[in-house]
Image 1 (spheres, helix red, strand yellow):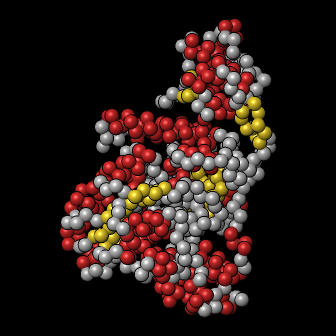
Image 2 (tube, rainbow, N blue to C red):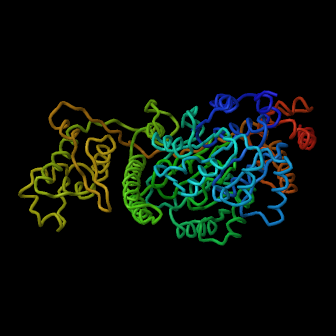
Image 3 (cartoon, one colour):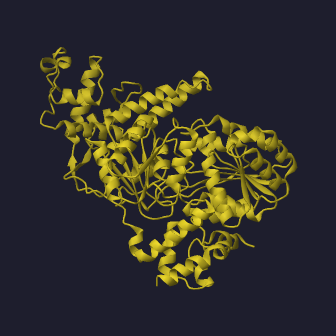
Length: 605
């Protein structure tokens, strides 16, 4: 059986997505591999297909219990013998799983990194032929990564215990050059085949808003998408509670998730969201890597995350089935201060030595700075994001709030020289200010904290931009920062600094432009993919799916994704061959569910 045959028979797809075929071929050839693929690009197929074709068992190291549960449920629904070992199992269930492993009834075994040091896993390593070990969310192994987990360092010692070295595959959605090098070094990969498929998710709309009233903006977004599944990320537990309570009070069915809740309530709330009982989940980033729900149609960040990697992963929970989806970030200056405080707190991690803490804190500060530029820029958001991850792209995508906004381009060369000259003259007096302070000085503020310096009498650049609005002045300073004409110090109170580009700006003939909004941006909403099919038939198919999912006690998307139901509603298959032509339908699912869904199609046609 070829990889293509396995893909069709078990997963119901006729062709591989970008990069999947290459990675699978190299794994089957016995090579170590590293796959860097965006959320929703199909990383799991890359190790699940070869796992079914290789002799012996594959061990998948995964960071979260919820993720293991969902993936194993989906594999079993497709007729694939899979299991997991983690702390959620009862003693009886744990023994039963071990029995299945030893009797050859498990092809894919999921385990948390902490589980690798247990006696049961050590015995499995000695007695069961393991032909592949897959490390999911592999960026967690690196201190340079945004989600470093010391438990991932246990993987290398587990690999050393194996009687025969298996092929090793590692996958992540986000990895810089330094993180990739760490993955290869720490896991001990042998000349791995490495493939980055690209970070662009064309089906996602990216938007940034800077509302005066965040909850009012959020309510408008959620209200417009009533009935659709959405995630609202908040920066703190307190905000999660507050936002969830307000949404419910305003008639929006919502639930909550954060680390301060009892385990039982977290599990209950997550299950209600995953099973489409409650459409809106308000959560901290604790509700993260374990979410495998395919029909999330929007993700709203109530606060700016502390880095682009986190934002990309969390926003990427939307549109996993390829349908149009929205990723909207509600930004305010307070978000920067809150994130900086959290960075200071996390830098006290006692598991790291002083040098490592200092290095990570410096890196976190730089990531925060670049995340802030994303939120305050007036040019293509997707282009900025892709360049951050090392991809070259045009500065227009047509599917972000900047590209959809009516802008005019202003020549700000003179204003740029004024800004740099003011910073230079202040530095000569050994005075240093941040964006707010410099804006006040350029606009000639009469506040006491400036009059005591007698700037009006002694500083030639004081009030030199008094005709420029405060908002535009700040935007111009931020634009110079994002384009690196000037820089900003790290720390709790960052101040503006000059660099070699600043000197070039003053001495050479440079032209600097900025895009300025002419009118408020239109609120964007993803075009509903459901509009292309008969809504009555689609609703009936969803009802059939919900009944089966309830009976089998699994999330609805484990039976079929929304994308599969839409293709089913469009093709309206009447026989087995027609049903197999639906994207996402394999032979096992045809046998298990075909009759029930084709009956619904006949009754609604």
